[in-house]
Image (cartoon, rainbow, N blue to C red; front, side):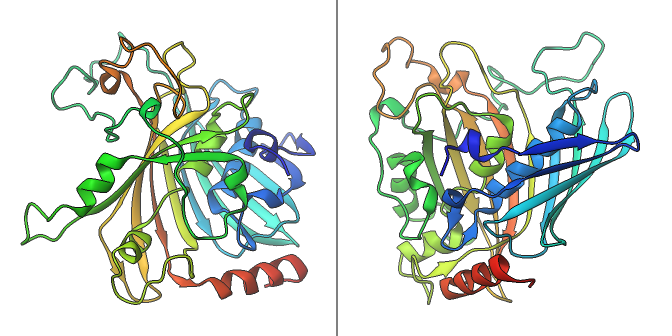
Length: 336
């Protein structure tokens, strides 16, 4: 029943002298896909727990997370147990377990360090950034101020009242064009601006875990093109593994939106069993909110100024939506 920043919250946190900590709370029901909490939202709880675990340490920034979703999570009380495996000068390695009903539902390995975009005089390695022609630019092509909200997804998403979304029409058009190289197949992609509706909301590091799991995957893009037996809105795409590399700090200066990001997703493979597929996701800063009036001069070179906040990859399945509802009921009521 809460916006994202409040939904990623705990009732209590405690740390012991043996480098472990425990965090307790309740999964918010608004952040469900049908009957099951969005995997990225639940991972955001894990990331927040680890940030709290490291709050008094010099290495406070998450650099990388790898998560395995072992069992279906539920709208219920949870405990997150965090343990320090090793703490060095540059990186700290943590293990976290998300538990409900005395069962481990998610296990994650995280690397913490110092996430800074400032150049280091002692580091001789080059940084690949604009204006270098080799530097990656934001893959979205349409400024968010030029767009309005998009009616998105026929899936039952409980959190659509908390976010606003505008798909990039330039990427949609590119999906419709014939492949440039017919001998290698056509890569389908999806891109959109996602805005947190509450004007007091802010994109925070744990928010990125939810945002990397909010996109149209390859099976959904294929369903839009009436390919095979994939039916839009009738399938559930449960995540089995999800990784996130946090690239740059979230900009806090003028010229960047505080509650909007750009999402770009692409996939190449769908395999048996159960429609196993991969998706690569990039999350970028945004120059404005969706449909927001801005100075025309500020919009001129906006693509050169954006930074990549996170790169993620995940492996997921394609199963009937009825499986979601059945597993959601079982996870809420009894052990799986």
